[in-house]
Length: 92
Image (tube, rainbow, N blue to C red):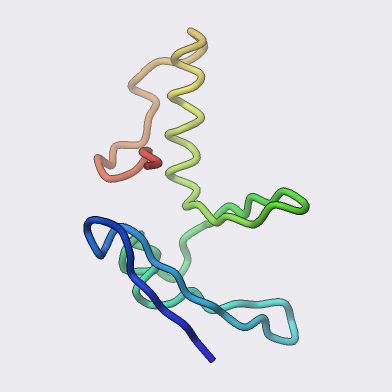
């Protein structure tokens, strides 16, 4: 059974869904989420997990921009090294 719910001020800001883990440990990311985050076949995703807390999935381009922003703040990188995608790199 799949439960889906959009919530927040803007109904498209947040998405909740249950997914079932297959025999090989695979899950299907719902189409609404793939569209929301512009996830396409072949995209690289980063899995972030903390035991006892949860699992998160982030596009690698977002993580690259977050990392570059942190390095810039520490004076260890140049701004031009960031990925040129205005929609990427901000986690809200």
